[in-house]
Length: 234
Image 1: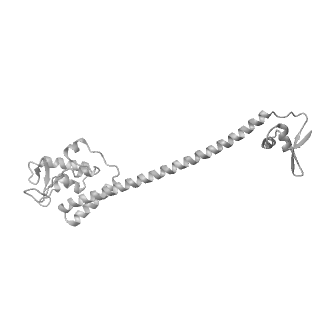
Image 2: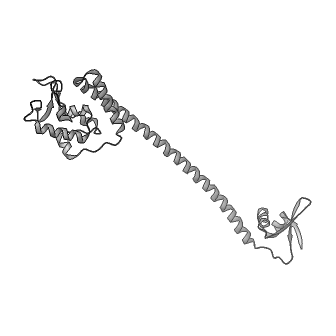
Image 3: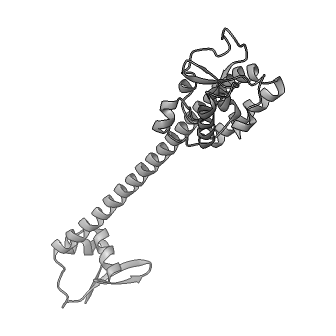
């Protein structure tokens, strides 16, 4: 039995000192500490480990270190992409909120123009406020049905261009200064889609025999300042 220092053992086995320490930790080499110095204990019967085995373990150690560094690099990239995605989502949300805010302001202005002509000042403000509140609550508008589109009924969720599609001014009629289309009247009242459809059917049925209902350009019109239409609007 013989003993030698770690440096001597490394030279004996033709490996690095780190490889000798690794073998001591794995238990393939015995060691003792005398006076604070670590010695490698070798027996005469124990053959020297092949240098190839030592190089293989060194390679494994280096490969582990490389993979560890690569893993840290990938984790950093994942964190960067996650932060970038969150920033994009926040920016898109703010953009959508701004679009809806501008759209609500435009809708409020349009409703204010119509309401100021049909209703007293206080009632007009109430109708505008109610319509704008309903627009905000309804986040996903229902699509127009084919029958409603053909009849000219405009849903609350339709783009504002649709609400302004009728360029004619109902108040510039030669005979009446309070004439308003049934479509615009129901829009101001805030009627739902099904309710508007039922009301329109009632007006079409009574149009020929009811003097309160006027037909101009193929469309139904009312005179809300002169007549009571509660029996047809219920």
